[in-house]
Amino acid sequence: MSPVFAPIFAALHEKAFPAEPWDEASFATLLAQPHMHGFLDERGGFLLLRIVLDEAEIITIGVTMPRQGIATALLAQGIATARAAGVQKIHLEVAEDNAAARALYAAQNFIQTGRRKAYYADGAAALTLARDLG
Image (cartoon, rainbow, N blue to C red):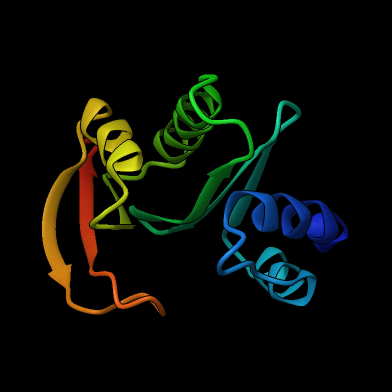
């Protein structure tokens, strides 16, 4: 997905994460990077995935309407893209206090690999998670 989609990603991110929205310029920079894959769901969701060699990282995923299956669909699309590219492991970070996201990742077989204290601007810790695809 090209940087031309940056305004859409930024608008969705602002709705999904009003306390810490990423701006259009940030998304334009990310979408211009090699190995970056962007996914949009017309119902109101997005996912950015970076694939390098046999590993991938979910940069961000968000939805504007929770509990509609949007995040699950986006995550499945990202995993399928990673698998097709030969990825063996996917990594991500999630706020420790984000129970809904943690449940989503647990249902998709992500396991905790670490914890980063006071990682987010609000002081929340981040959990690092990974899933083997091999």
